[in-house]
Amino acid sequence: MATFKVGDKVVYPAHGVAEVVSIEKRDIGGDLQMFYMLKIMENGMRVMVPMTNVDQVGMREIVSSDEADKVFDVLKKREKMMESTTWNRRHREYMDKIKTGSVFEVAKVLRDLYVLKGDKELSFGERKMLDTARSLLVREISISKGITQEEVETKFRAIFRF
Image 1 (cartoon, one colour):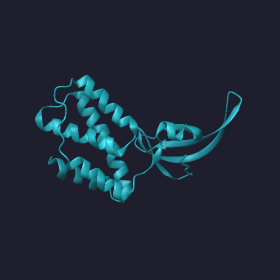
Image 2: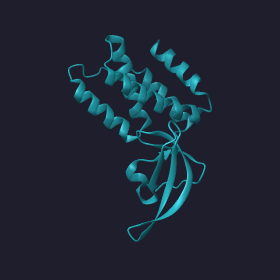
Image 3: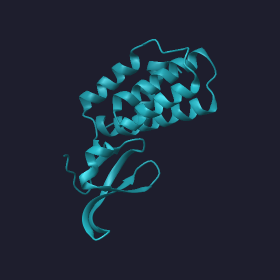
Image 4: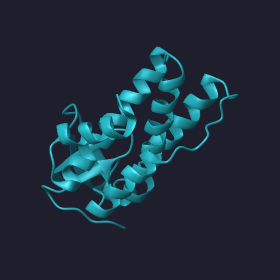
């Protein structure tokens, strides 16, 4: 089980990068439990994660700089998507990938949606998912690589040529 300390930056699946703002003991139904108190950096939302559930919810450290480089490799790969699948099925598959918290799965979602965007106009739901995947990756990669979010966006633009 991963352990974190106050001030650590972590990834909380589907919400992105968060900061551990405190570690607190709470009485839950007569049972004392320890919680990580997180602040989601994107929107300031507060999340309580029981220390015993860290692995179960997928909370993890920020990827290393080398792993961040591998994310760019994933984005550059042009794999054939399942064109015949309905948007509902793709949406479910994309959400499942985002919820894993894996930076590589989120990168696949971003890549697939950018490829799709090159072929057709994205629906509102597709654009929203593309924005979600992009913002999750941009913040984590910028922290991992020690570069600005704008620099990450510039790298994305170079890969997807937009």
